[in-house]
Length: 454
Image (cartoon, rainbow, N blue to C red):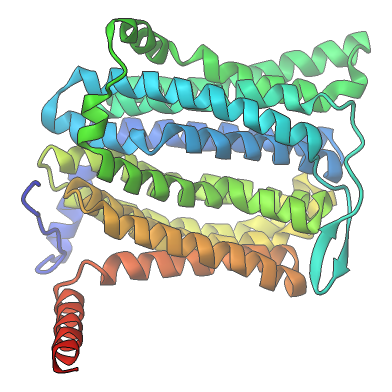
């Protein structure tokens, strides 16, 4: 295990703070990651906003559900190996780790995509819901052409290929390559949306299949930017199925896998729960607010992606942490003040999303703190603490959606996410502390003494 490096902010003066900010702004790697994340989030949000303009609220909830389900199953297939690559490759420089990851995720992705397709075929989401014993139960299957299950395989496999591709770039600390992969996938999405829109508008073909065309526009670019993954997969033909590098890091990988699944709830699982328990109308309202959040979360996402390989290689990067926190405070203020005007102007049918957007923007600061602490703990290979934090936040989020959603609907969904991020930040700050460790050890010792006496 690597030596733990403390990164605190004691003794920072106004001048030293300004110097740190200036130095951080000149860090090319962080700029590549941040700009790539910004383009990804902005154009990813634009994809959903264009869908919101082109579809009804229910139709918008329809594509949100299937994309979210595909991403979630894809996250399961990745097994947390993106964090394993980002953490261990900078330390060990072993190509076998990346190649084994490509082969294993491909095999798992194939199997789970088939299972997900069968699930979608037999269990479509609901258009509406009713209250039974204070819970929302789906009562009407979605009216469609029944072909949605076909899209599960490309969305899931595309998610796997794309994730390992950018993780490979981060592990190599090739931040320019990460920028290309992360930004180009969304650019291609928007291009395909434009092509399909004009083709349908001018020819009249596929007017009843607009939702499915948008699913194609989402899935196809994931394959188009995954050249590095396919190259690793081809080289894996010469390997055995022992997966020795992955097995050597299995505990860490499983911990980060659990963390990844919990993170998926932030952008995926919550929508699946809302769609199943509350119906697509509420999902469409909430998802618009969430698209703004994804843009707001550019900084915390960039911090985790950049700081993890940097800290794993021995760099502290305190200046980047300070820039992230300052930018987050500004983003939160802007989100609260600007959201009502922006939504009323562009999306008058989604005015119910305004309070949810304002509430959910408050989650950006605790999410940023959690990202910084996660990068520190993962670089120190203390993945168990991160797993506990993210799984607890997941439970809080899902429970909050079910309980608060009954009373406040979309605002309740947003409040549940906010509470989960506050809980996550607190846990990641408290659990690794020396005082907490001493307290736990003292309690364990007391229990052992009592057992001996009895």
